[in-house]
Image (cartoon, rainbow, N blue to C red):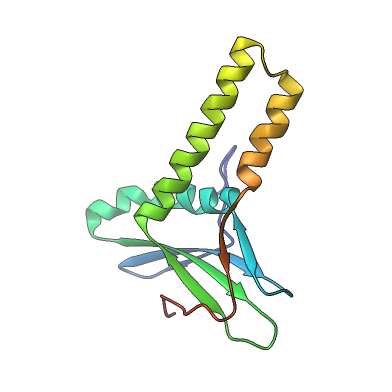
Length: 135
């Protein structure tokens, strides 16, 4: 899945009827934050494989978090989660574009703020959260 401008998930699992893309987190603290950019990586991977849906292949996006002395916590993202992330990014970046076009934001500040949109935390996984997906 390499290519110019394409983000890659941390891991992909393939079977004859299912493709699962993973973003993996490790945390030494009480939570594992997942950034919008990491969710966008999963979105782009699912977009890449979307033509296979017509053949009946099921696509899933999973965030996996590992905590010290605990099992992995798996969080399956719904299509709504993925779309919400994409819409939020698009809305915030468009607002910044408007500021750039109107001259209220300088280009260097624009780039910095766009970067910060992608670094926003989308969700936090805690060690006590139940997994909603089993490998």
